[in-house]
Amino acid sequence: MSVIKNDLILRTLRGEKTERVPVWMMRQAGRYLPEYMELRRKYGFFERCQTPELACEITLQPVDIIGVDAAILFSDILVVPQAMGLEVQLIESKGPILPNPIQTSNDLQRIHIPDVHESLGYVFKAIELIKKELNGRVPLIGFAGAPWTLLCYMVQGKGSKTFDEAKAFCYQQPQLAHQLLQMITDTTIAYLQQQIAAGADTVQVFDSWGGLLSKADFETYSLPYLEQIVKAIQPIAPVILFAKGAWYSLTEMANTGAAALGIDWCTPPNMARKLAGEKITLQGNFDPAKLLSPIPEIKKEVKNMLQAFGGQHHIANLGHGILPNVPVDHAKAFVDTVKEWQPN
Ligand SMILES: Cc1c2[nH]c(c1CCC(=O)O)Cc1[nH]c(c(CCC(=O)O)c1C)Cc1[nH]c(c(CCC(=O)O)c1C)Cc1[nH]c(c(C)c1CCC(=O)O)C2
Image 1: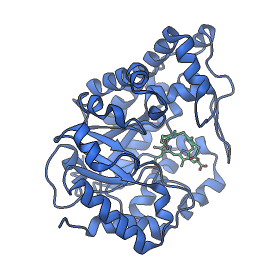
Image 2: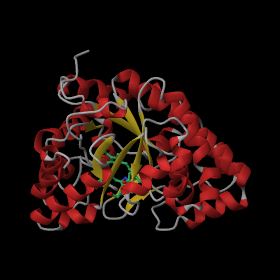
Image 3: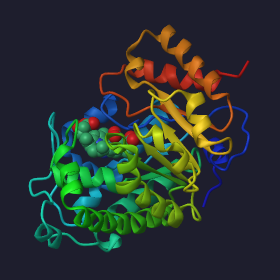
């Protein structure tokens, strides 16, 4: 194992003070990069995920091109439902499609808690390769979808603005919903443990649709499962919880013992800090669409964001994934501004 030269993110996650704020971007390996688009023309989405050499090459692209302080594994949250036995297709311009979603207790019989070595071994191989190629330049972030967000896709069968069918499933058949959430949680814990065993230095749990639930429902259908994941994983590697839109439960999420909480751009940094407490690291929260502003405007707004977080116990990031139409030099301006900034 090589020593990590730039370990700013890991030190920030441990709650240490650092000489500057570290930075990475959600979905940093993706369509705004011409180098990614070139591989996208040649290989299918899951082919890119399942071929360790391709996953490795794509993971390293933003490290080499944009200069971020961490790599994030190139994969997708939907490889977990796939490993559990559901068919997942990724249709260009339509997003994910699961042709046989879960709707009844019979449907639950079609899925299982997989042996992650067998069904997701390609991910661990990719991680080993990435660690070798990174050679300690920056840490590697592993990840998984939160059980609630995966349930959304597994029940709705496709992307949605409201995930109303997934919510109806929970409200009409709560017992079944909890059974499914527990199966996803057990799979996710084993999956993240093996990502860490393969070399991931930290992991992020993406609850992209957490904010679709009321506080009470978030604390029924999402939080207890996030808590199980944190309890199992935090003793072996720092966990970043990102529940987009679920600002109302930041206190409860901080109480899980996670190392860091992701914040979206609708949650002001001072409010997030008040709710989450003084100790925990906060990550975020630049509006991804603001990367479409002129570069001088991006620089000004990034500095405002950094000042609002105060310069310590903060990992600079977007408040959600980078948009495909962001010019590369705008993404680079975001990263460079963070790297150059010092608090007043
Ligand atoms: C909800 C969700 C998914 N996947 C993910 C989430 C949670 C984060 C979020 O809310 O954005 C997570 C994800 N997906 C991908 C990564 C790779 C690592 C990274 O760079 O952050 C990560 C961390 C690659 C991807 N996953 C996907 C792409 C685009 C595929 C392509 O067309 O090349 C990439 C680079 C496909 C995908 N995968 C998913 C959707 C809805 C889509 C289609 C919409 C879209 O294209 O953005 C499910």
